[in-house]
Length: 237
Image (tube, rainbow, N blue to C red):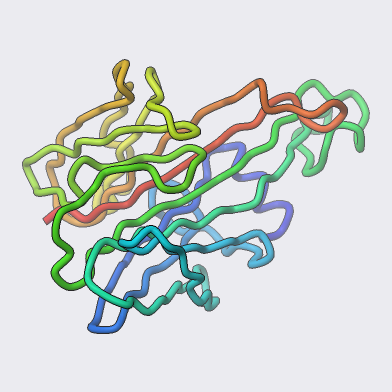
């Protein structure tokens, strides 16, 4: 992803995992970059770290193949269960100057009024075979959305919990986007237990997005805070 595409993160672009397909031996899914589940360019593969958490709690490294405007991720499964795919996009530092946002730490520029490190992640849970009981626990350890149930139904509700560094995150805004509609459908804040629930009124893929700013994660002459963004995609049927 070129520097001019990186700057779109400031305006609200994010990464997400979708289009999941399974077979007897594993699964594949797409990694996209854009806004409200509309693709807008590709990513620099050097910034992408994909990882799959197995039902046993171990990890495996999936393959990553470039396509025209996205990437395909594939992995083989050793058995039945829920496989959680996580993509970590390495942090990008933006510095705001009189000329606008620049890619790089504050010490590289003059008249910097703000500098932030933006760290994005994407998540997708894939059931393979007789997946069995789902255990809704965080697996990644930074900012994460965990569904109470990995399956959602049309005219039902999505029940989610948001965790930051393994602990429930209250008052976090969760945005729900319908791929079918291509826009925000609702935004709600988590309660004291980091939980939120919202209506699902159409079929297809839904993206849930949470953003969290941590001013304690800063570095002198580099950036003032870290902005974490995480997405979870689920399919409503």
